[in-house]
Length: 256
Ligand SMILES: NC(=O)c1ccc[n+]([C@@H]2O[C@H](COP(=O)([O-])OP(=O)(O)OC[C@H]3O[C@@H](n4cnc5c(N)ncnc54)[C@H](O)[C@@H]3O)[C@@H](O)[C@H]2O)c1
Image (cartoon, rainbow, N blue to C red; front, side):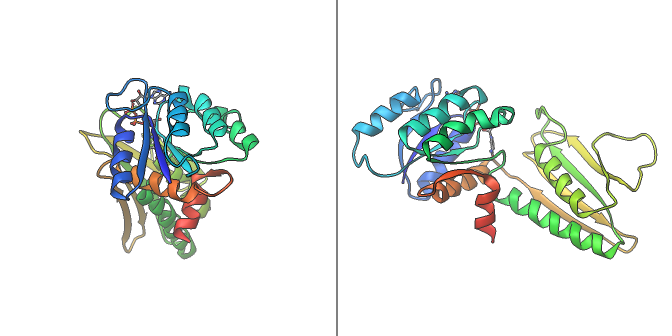
């Protein structure tokens, strides 16, 4: 496959490293502003690839850019016949509009807000642990997440996802409580505790607690590398497929 990196910011640089490590050719790096990019726009990259060597080889765009560009980018991928991994976030409220060109062209795209292999393993392990705890009837549950002090949202998107899957398994937890409560916490509340400190890239801990013991499961990100590894594996997976997939379908295949 020929890879095109779209968005040469923090994620784009990480993806470049992982593509090289896994022996993939990088046909273009698209960014209107970043130094080191080889094309300022997708139109320009499409033109370069059409004129280049082996024009028949499948192309996969790996898109970690900005939400404003998503609609125009999916149109361009569909028009060029490229497969795409869409990791850019912040466009979910326009989902059908953004994905329509790919559906209409019959090309392929996988999208998701978390391509991290470890984080996706963690979500699935957390679900299983909550299911076992629920069967015993002995365990209370909570979730603790820590991130760097510049993080804008709280709780993290991953914490919300983990809390939701745990809630599906723990029938008595009817409410996800993301606030500090200045009272006794009710048994039906699943407490999600957020802390912000220094430059922690992201730590999530599931706690299952009984009178006899505590089971703790922790995912601790060290860098953005986990996202990039998952995105490149998803690029390898989407080549040769047809249709629009959420990242869940990719991880179902990877883990099952
Ligand atoms: N899905 C995931 O697993 C995951 C993980 C991390 C980050 N993200 C998302 O990826 C996106 C990028 O994150 P980042 O940290 O690399 O941001 P960043 O700000 O470091 O980089 C974004 C880059 O996109 C470029 N850009 C803007 N418009 C463009 C266009 N039309 N075409 C090509 N490039 C364009 C910008 O010039 C910039 O260099 C964000 O939406 C972020 O939320 C997703």
